[in-house]
Amino acid sequence: MSATVETIRQVEEATGKYKYGFVTDIEVDKAPKGLSEDTVRLISAKKNEPEWMLEWRLKAYRHWLTMEEPDWAKLNYPPIDYQDIYYYAAPKQADGPKSLDEVDPELLRTYEKLGIPLREQEMLAGVAVDAVFDSVSVATTFREKLFEAGVIFCPISEAIQDYPELVKEYIGSVVPQGDNYFAALNSAVFTDGSFVYIPKGVRCPMELSTYFRINEQNTGQFERTLIIADEES
Image: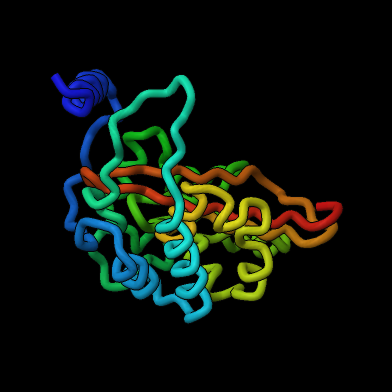
């Protein structure tokens, strides 16, 4: 039995006993399988990104092509076929939801089954949640309340549109896009994640959490979280 087949068997056994190993039956918009410059351009187009963000991605992708995957000490896993992965998958929807009332009820039920009732989270004080499903954020709670306190909490795909100067200044400032093999890959194909900005001297009034859920088979979820906490915040 090959290592790949054995790994698949072990995963199937594990998910069979795993109460959260269910699949949500919804229509999905997927990019063609495989990774190329066209894939990077497609992701950027799906997100309606400005030209500078596309160039940032392409620079990371071209650098990734020159790198070798690390050979980890004392860690064995089957070779990853980067051309056998979907790099973008999202629930089919004309426009992104503006509020929880516009979120597909099936997605809300999914998070309730996971123990993350988004509607209840919105009614209960204490925790704000950004819920990422495959390649997109489908709901972010308490955004308005946080904004009133001076805190920006939103999907990074929206931050690129609405707060480009902040994203330009800080994205990749801790781990540069060319720092390592996987940093370069993530920089090229990340699809969503959380963005947080807390200005100088501002205290965030509640906890912030992000929940990532992979639903589509053979899909890589490349999230990107950018947290900017200014001085004395």
